[in-house]
Length: 411
Ligand SMILES: *[C@@H]1O[C@H](CO)[C@@H](O)[C@H](O)[C@H]1NC(C)=O
Ligand SMILES: *[C@@H]1O[C@H](CO)[C@@H](O)[C@H](O)[C@H]1NC(C)=O
Ligand SMILES: *[C@@H]1O[C@H](CO)[C@@H](O)[C@H](O)[C@H]1NC(C)=O
Ligand SMILES: *[C@@H]1O[C@H](CO)[C@@H](O)[C@H](O)[C@H]1NC(C)=O
Ligand SMILES: *[C@@H]1O[C@H](CO)[C@@H](O)[C@H](O)[C@H]1NC(C)=O
Ligand SMILES: *[C@@H]1O[C@H](CO)[C@@H](O)[C@H](O)[C@H]1NC(C)=O
Ligand SMILES: *[C@@H]1O[C@H](CO)[C@@H](O)[C@H](O)[C@H]1NC(C)=O
Ligand SMILES: *[C@@H]1O[C@H](CO)[C@@H](O)[C@H](O)[C@H]1NC(C)=O
Ligand SMILES: *[C@@H]1O[C@H](CO)[C@@H](O)[C@H](O)[C@H]1NC(C)=O
Ligand SMILES: *[C@@H]1O[C@H](CO)[C@@H](O)[C@H](O)[C@H]1NC(C)=O
Ligand SMILES: *[C@@H]1O[C@H](CO)[C@@H](O)[C@H](O)[C@H]1NC(C)=O
Ligand SMILES: CC(=O)N[C@H]1CO[C@H](CO)[C@@H](O)[C@@H]1O
Image (tube, rainbow, N blue to C red):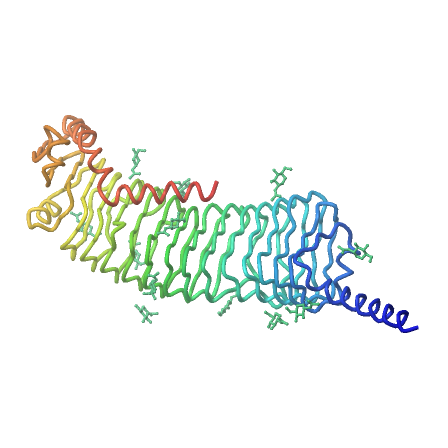
């Protein structure tokens, strides 16, 4: 009698336990919809939910909070994922290689640890009615999204939006980006960050316009590469760690009216084919790294520049007057190992240190002037002789390392 009672009490306890425990599993893999329905009594699910490649639709009913991650990878038949009551995902919302997924319905979702979406070629919009306003890191790559409506953050660590070929508008209320913003190779993208005050590291590639009216600091590097805009401005930017403006083939006009200091990663302005006059830096006084100017320009004006701590390498394919840089150099304003100014009309090369003089050989310390074809070839000679040095000096190296990293990051 006693034994029988004891046993059934145990049985009841274990059933109750099982019912509670299902919400605290560290991970469940749903192969069929009923696996998800098992969890519908859980307000909070404590672990990860993995949607397997066998599902063709998935609805997460009941659950309001997932403490772990929500993951669906490598599924070629799923068309829809929805979670009518879900408010938060503590871990990663990871979707990758979902070739026909077209519906993402998360009407109450507001908080996610990390969004990591890669290769969702049929996702063209988000049904996120409440909208995600809190998320640490976001990567969205290779989707059919036309806007990011449904995600609007005020702070972010990483925002990496690349290769979304129909994404023409990126607008967010970000005020700070503590690690990295990289917007590269999307559609005809107009980027608008009307409240962004500072970003640790900022990269824009192939964008059609950039609006950052209050941006005042970029701590590390600001890279503007292969963009399609004809003008770029940063009206409130005072400080950047490094600034690189390269291969923006339509660029004719730049405006950095408050920029006073560029840090150790230096300034590079190269191969912006239509930028015949390099200007827009009225208050730039100090560059703590190198300056590299390369391309078809006739004019480079930095009226307040008094100190460059790195090397200066100017290489114009056009008529260019080196005299203002020559004076900066002779006034001791260039502290790096090398100063070189080469143009179709003029070539000046001065190696400032013993090492530089030794390795740049015959050209070390020499000043050559000429005009027309013969000087163009003398400029080429100077360039190849001096380039091992230039590559090794502080910023040229840092910038190319950065660029390499950017490309590896994307491909
Ligand atoms: C499940 O997790 C919640 C929150 O961590 C905890 O309060 C509860 O006691 C756990 N339940 C069981 C059966 O482990
Ligand atoms: C859901 O419940 C059914 C029936 O109790 C069970 O067979 C199945 O394994 C459960 N699914 C998961 C993922 O726990
Ligand atoms: C997807 O499947 C491919 C091949 O089946 C595999 O190599 C890859 O690791 C899988 N990716 C993920 C994220 O599971
Ligand atoms: C569920 O998530 C929401 C949104 O992040 C949050 O406000 C709420 O406190 C969470 N609830 C629990 C029980 O964790
Ligand atoms: C994003 O949020 C900001 C406030 O942080 C708001 O001003 C802006 O209109 C929102 N943008 C969109 C596209 O919802
Ligand atoms: C410009 O940046 C400064 C910080 O350097 C900030 O205090 C100021 O509000 C910004 N100006 C505008 C117009 O937003
Ligand atoms: C970046 O600059 C901002 C604004 O000046 C500052 O608040 C922040 O601490 C800096 N971050 C780092 C990592 O230097
Ligand atoms: C260059 O850009 C600045 C600021 O955007 C603008 O005020 C100026 O008119 C532009 N100049 C030309 C020649 O387009
Ligand atoms: C500019 O383009 C030329 C020719 O393609 C290339 O040799 C040079 O390295 C480029 N300059 C920079 C700084 O990338
Ligand atoms: C260089 O450009 C600036 C600003 O665009 C202009 O004021 C100046 O006259 C130009 N100098 C020459 C020599 O063309
Ligand atoms: C800046 O961002 C690029 C990617 O866009 C990354 O490769 C690089 O390491 C970052 N730089 C720093 C100083 O964090
Ligand atoms: C409009 C325009 O000239 N866009 C060019 C910007 O630069 C990239 C690469 O440098 C070109 O591919 C675009 O055609």
